[in-house]
Image (cartoon, rainbow, N blue to C red; front, side, top):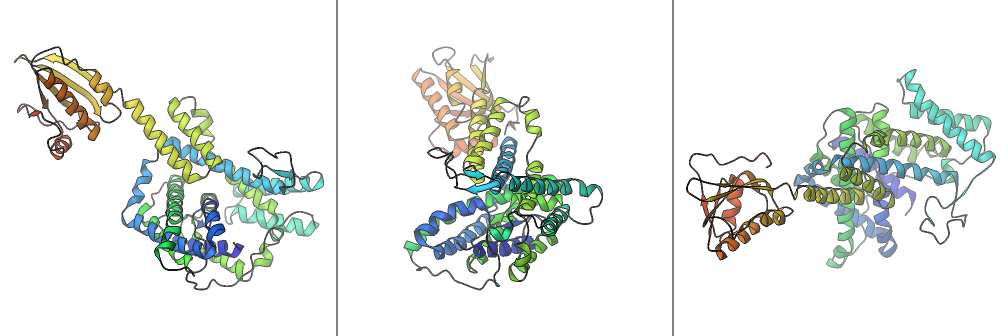
Length: 483
């Protein structure tokens, strides 16, 4: 698609989310993670189907916000967050390497999995390389040390202006923004997607819209969490979901490609002191002004200055403390951290987070599968009492069942759940299986001290659990600390 499609999206998404979003200081716009998904849709069906998919993407995001699904970002474990930001830093770093060469002009990676990646470039050498490195270094030095002298102006802005003036003043031969693409354009105009309004169109765009909505919300909510941590404040996830949805719906009918929160740009904004809505609104309006009247100025900015800014972002984004703690945290957490970092680099951020959450959940279930313990005692009436300690769920039912010897003991068996909880349907199935085993052995199974939630599960199960439930009047129904 044309560069203006992305620029229009960056302006509209950035302006709307800055105005009505749930996290002031966060910057939104067109992102690479969304663009990767859009490539196949545009190639197969054209850009008009992209606009339709973006509109539907926005509707799905509004629905997610209305259903208050933003709260599920709290379920992302800390190792996943660490892996996410580390992988993001690596991705940003690798993306800058392409500016040190000419993509596709080398054969040294031909027939390898790295062919046509960002590393498959003909590296520049000699004076062009020294000039590029010098300008990148100058940019980084200004950004790093200017805040120690003054914070009246953003150090990144001063660095970009200074390096641009140096290049123009010394007439240095280096790549500038204008060598990559022109950003000149006009105001975005209202444009309904020119696609047939039928089920066939819906089936074409729905899978893409769903994936785009999921990626957009995951990246936006993770960015919100990072900004929360940096600013020591708390954003509103559900409000941000709705704002992202409104922004994408509007963008789709104005010829934009849609977008979401941009982590790198948000980090730049927050580190430069932009903590309120005005910073995001200003960024969006400045982008529009550059499109309308300032394109000639922007196109003179050296790419080396932008690379230097992004290298500072990489340094600030990467969690260097992870090297120190990786030997101290559980091996499972270290594995998740490294896995998410690798998947982020190999695929995209959203896939990495989903994979990380799933693996972390499986690891958690595996580690807690053997936490259920059974203690056998004999009561005054001669009944055998098994006291269960730990949660009974799908991961622990096998270990739970293996601890009972149905052939031994009295004819009446009591299972006491005062230190446990039946968490899911698998736990009910385990109780039912145990009841059948004791029944076949000529014994009766009684259950005691179920929490209120557990007894609700038993009632909902109907005839699934055919046992007698006892409530000892000398005890209250247990409120399990594991619940």
